[in-house]
Length: 125
Image (cartoon, rainbow, N blue to C red; front, side, top):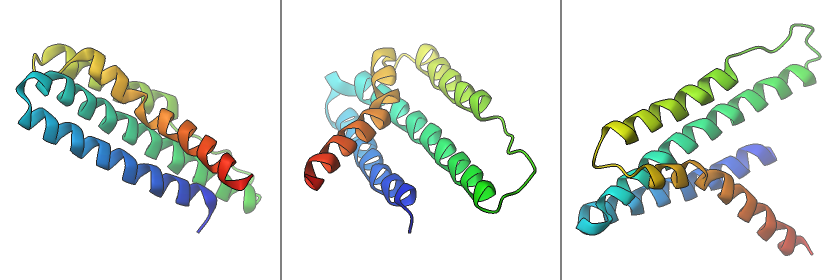
């Protein structure tokens, strides 16, 4: 299994665990309900965006290895923007979802990548 697939699998596990914890806390603690739903929504959107980027990276890498002449194209940026806009729309229209929590959840996957990179760099040295 290549490094990208291993990294994504570890990060997806972290994201799903964080998603589950946010939902459980939102259902158990009433004062955390809006923030928990916002964090869960943002984490779900962030996970979808990262899956999209990982899939695109694998596709481009496969074309480079096969030395294919046809250009890899797609709607990557449009898809990511649509996911973010849909999550923002849901957060704005639903009073049970905190917008700040959704934005924090959107960057949770990227923060997980940074933390994983720093920890793996320390582990190697």
